[in-house]
Every structure is written in structure tokens, then in C-alpha cells.
Image (cartoon, rainbow, N blue to C red):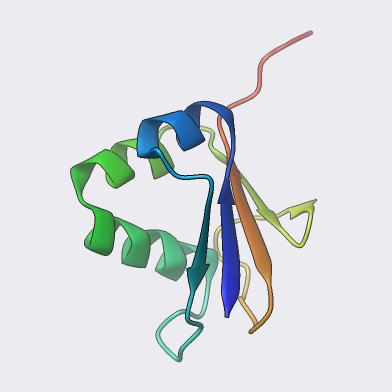
Length: 84
């Protein structure tokens, strides 16, 4: 099972704070997970998860979307951060 969390503007856009997603053979990477979520959720999910510079965290570490997933992982999506 994967725990998937959404923060800030992404959480608001999806009206969802957290999901439990069954980990299976077709969910090898974060890219696969994003595609799966969009396939299930539709265009609203595509707009939220594929906006430029979305931050992806795996087990509380920022990673690229080609990072491999394992059962029990926690994935988090954050909107682009700004500041100086």
C-alpha cells in the first residue's frame, strides 16, 4: 500500500488530502503513480499533478519522478515553491 498526500494548492484543487493506493507491478515509479491517479481522477488531477515545477517527495525526501516505488512508501505532492 502507498500513502499519497497532497499539500496546499494541490490539495485544494483536488479536494483531497490523502489517499491509500494499492501498490502493484504497474506502479514502478512516481511517473507511473501520477499517470494512474490521472487515469482514475480525470482532467482536474492532470492539471494539478502536471503543473510545472510540482515538488515530489518520497518518504520525506524530494526526488525525481523516475524514482522507484516500494510497498509502504509515502509519496507527497507539493505545489511549486517560491521565495527568496
